[in-house]
Amino acid sequence: MNPDALIDQIAFDAGGLVTAIAQDYQTNEVLMVAFMNEATVRQTLETGLMTYWSRSRQRVWVKGETSGHTQEVREVRLDCDGDALVFKVLQHGGAACHTGHRSCFFRRFDDDRLVEAGVHVFDPDEVYGDESESR
Image 1 (tube, helix red, strand yellow):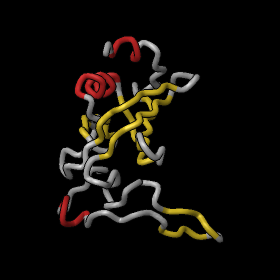
Image 2 (image 1 turned 90 degrees about the horizontal axis):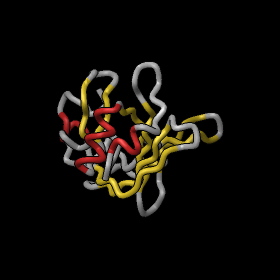
Image 3 (image 1 turned 90 degrees about the vertical axis):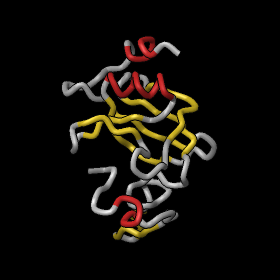
C-alpha cells in the first residue's frame, strides 16, 4: 500500500491533524475517535496497526502499546471533504477505551441524563496503574 496516495488526498487542519474514527470491522460499532498527523497516518498504513497523535501528550501513540489492546487495520475510508478518516479495525483484547469499555461511546444520553450502556471489559487501574492511554 502506498501511503502517499492517501496522504495526498487528506485535508489536514491548520495544526497538521485529521480526525480519525476507529470502527469495528465486523459490527460497524464506533470504537473511538482520535487524531492523526501525516507521520501517524503513514505509520498506520505501513504497519497495519492504528497509530495516533496524542494531543495531550504531544507524541505518537500506538493504540495498545500499554494495554495490549491493539487495532488491526482492515479498511480505510476518507470522507468527501478529505478531513476525516474512518478505519475499519479488528479490535484485539476486547476493549478500545482506556476506561476499560469496549467502545469510548459507552454512555447514552437518556431522559436528560447519561446512562452507562457499554460493555466493561477490564479494570483500567490493573492495566495502566496511574497512567492512561488517553493522557
